[in-house]
Amino acid sequence: GVFVATLGRVAFVPDKNGDGKGDAEIVVADGWAPPQRLAGGASDCLGLALDKDGSVWFGLGTKNMNSPYVPDDAGKMTYNVADERGSIWRVSADFKTREKICSGIRYPVGFAFNAAGDLFVTDQEGATWLPNGNPFDELLHIQTGRHSGFPPRHPKHLPEVFDEPSVFDYGPQHQSACGMRFNEG
Image 1 (cartoon, rainbow, N blue to C red):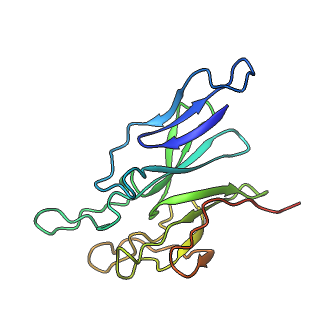
Image 2: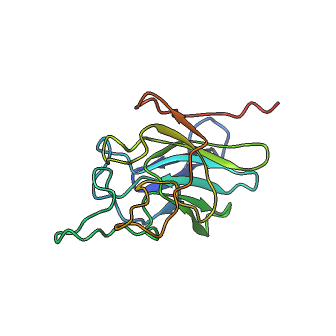
């Protein structure tokens, strides 16, 4: 079968009889709040990979790419690292348990595990939409409980986080890697 990350859900489409066609759609994960603003009109759930145990890892795009600290009508910034959006998630192989791995993600696209089982993702740059946002597209090493920098630490709006540095920055701007594979022999 095939796993699909799409607007509002992650699905698995099995080929039960081996004819090369999907026989059903099984929802792996859904139920998250929609973003305030969709990138490109449809970007929501992006990037996906399976680990050695069969768990499904995927990314949810940021809540509001143009205003990532999410000001309310009174101008108070409401971004919270505990929110579902702008994060990487793991769903158990039986699709019963979903856990948030990290925050601070803008729009993760390329996902890959190395031979040691470490997850790496590519994240789309944020400086076009936010001064002091990551200026380049990034390769990130995903680590539990960490914040990858979108939105970045801010002394007033987000003082409690420490931004994880990227492993590699792609330049010039808008040169994101949309897929990757480790060449480890």
